[in-house]
Length: 302
Image (cartoon, rainbow, N blue to C red; front, top):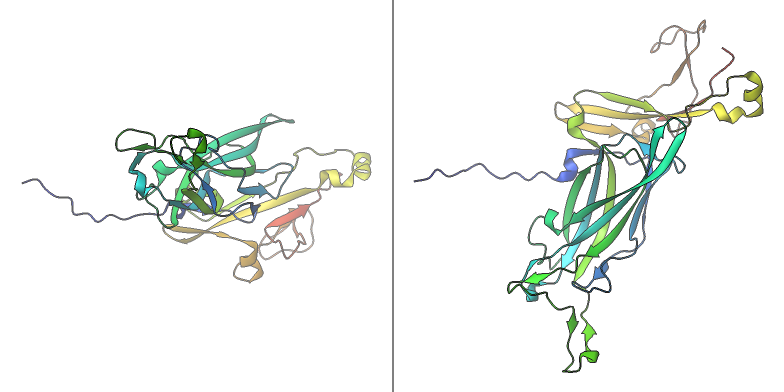
């Protein structure tokens, strides 16, 4: 008698495998409860129904390795005995490529989250059913915006191998056919950007800027364009909660006094000795509502 595998199945939510960075993006729901009719060749894809954009509009945000998406799907196809066919969400990622210093160009990537990725029978979701997927986007440089579209592949096949109908006949006169009501739906789309939890083993701080790396090196140039040298330095803090659990520390965590962030600039001969930084480090005053970033004005005369 063959041995039976009695190991219990443990489902891990895809979104539980990533750390989401929420503070650097704003999202917009453009349309809710969107519907399409399977095999309607005249409408295979919707307009943009959800968009997430970088708060750094001019440059985008760099360094992410994961993009997660969640949505609720409903499919009223049980009467058609559907055995194959694709529908889901197309995610269009707008980014920048910096191929050499001072040179940028736009790039567009399309990610597909479809019925093949779903848990359960995607053709018999008679109520909205939540689904998730996480993409590896480590190859994408700077994310500026992500737009989501709902689509159907115009390829739904029944058990007899035939395309299921998208029109209901009203008699022998084909001109009298009418389009069937929507039978594919999506709602509650959310997009997340961040990192794979497996990328981290210890407490991690990532300090970066999305501003230009150039400076004006003469005092005269600095006086004429004082803001040109100002940099917004940002911090991402991945906090190790336990051996296998990490979380993102946000501005709200700092504001609620759960954690503390201090910024310093190197100043040789600085009189005060800070209890955290020691000698020659001058504490920088920051916006207390956004402690995870620092406006830094370098002294180019030194």
